[in-house]
Amino acid sequence: DFQMTQSPSTLSASVGDRVTITCRASQSISSWLAWYQQKPGKAPKVLIYKASSLESGVPPRFSGNGSGTEFTLTISSLQPDDFATYYCQQYNSGFTFGPGTKVDI
Amino acid sequence: QLQLQESGPGLVKPSETLSLSCSVSGGFISSSSYYWGWIRQPPGKGLEWIGSIYYSGSAYYNPSLKSRVTISVDTSNNQFSLKLTSLTAADTAVYYCARRSPELIFDSWGQGTLVTVSS
Image: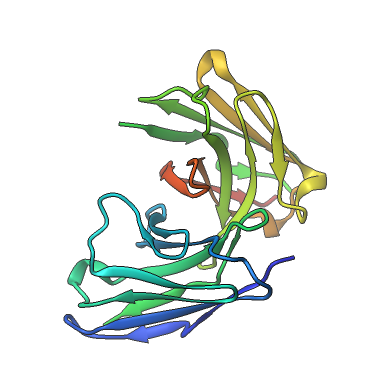
């Protein structure tokens, strides 16, 4: 079984801040990692896949990095629309989501 | 534009079976390279993948739910379905249907439907 952890669980930030969220896998998942953004009452939206590939239509202020067991999602300059919960997801074997990181003001 | 829409009961009794359907519009469920899946989210908690299916009927499931889950596909009606048996309160969640792309990510989602398990 793959276990995913995220840190921090909550992140307080301001518009314009550079924000980094970390995701760790319990065993190596190569680059089979995606990042999703979810706003209250809405379905998740994919931002990044294969650890660092930007999904079509996603602003370039979002970037992903990492391989193996440690990954990061960075928002270079936080915008008002970015306050949300972010989930990492491994797809090396089945699909397992991390517990989420809430980005708030 | 692809749209997915979940349908089914909002309230189910413990020990009973949940049946949900997902109707796909703006695209064909028989498109090659795409799988179709179910993901759930208990209130205030994280996301859990339930299982996925190809239009051929080939399905695979989360091992933790496998004994209780069946996902099926109906290409003639462009929809797929979820059955989850032996429900308990722990199965209370928003259930989403979604499309899994060739890049193995869930790139299109339904709006979700809340299912409450309670007597």
